[in-house]
Length: 364
Image (cartoon, rainbow, N blue to C red; front, side):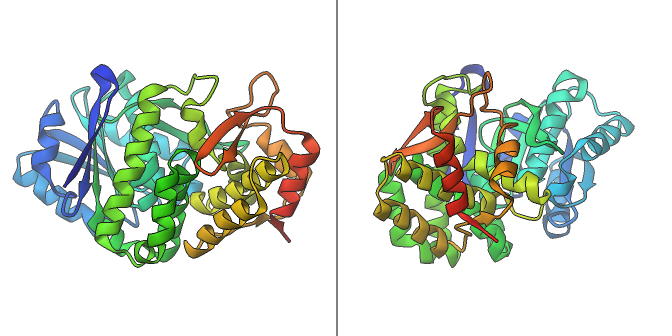
């Protein structure tokens, strides 16, 4: 088992990575205020793991209220959030009840937002079951839901007490979901860790073949990178650098997800296409070479990811991007690359270059 700590003073918490952690009740019990949890999962993950986890909990004397939601990004909305609240109220859960998220990023975001809002805040534990959630969404405390006008526009910062990333769960992950998660792994190399990017280039085939040792290394390195960034800028308030750099490709990518309809493109697929747009824009600004952009493109393709987005039209992309959370005082702030391994926040990219980058990385 690999162990990291996200250092946030009184809100610090461990991130445990390894096989067989899904039912590691001995790791969970110290973080419970009472022997009672509300376990939030979905219709895809619950049949795989719910019975095992509930059995382990009940054997340890922990009562479980299961809450099973529909699966998919399309259900990351008010209705699903209220299903959780309804179940918590019906079961008379109190402030000592810990909400446990068992699933991917959608479940983690929904369960975390429910934990932040139910009775003004209850404890929360993440048990992520996808690569994307293990390397990104389960760490850092961002929770929320989507709105028809924009992704993740409603939510709260609410840190978990513990993150348990069981690498065994990745063995049952569909290939498309594995690729989606790999987009976020590649992101860490691009924004701040060039040696990691080079390691990914050397090991991508093994990672995509679900080599357990390689996946554990990639998850640990990704979480270590995110933990460092979040510890320095928990609430994404830094004007230069900071947590916003984790959003490489996301402004373009969120436009794809919203414009196509939530769930049509997986998050990592949209981020991959968005990252190519950001790389192309960085090239047009003179920061990346054509060879750099091709290097990024080649790695995305080896990870089974798209390297161009849908042809929504430049005006539609820009309209959707105007709703991004990084827009301040009407200024669109993009995460771009000064070089591979060196991301920056940039608010002065010429509109013509942004449009050209979108067109160059869009397909009919």
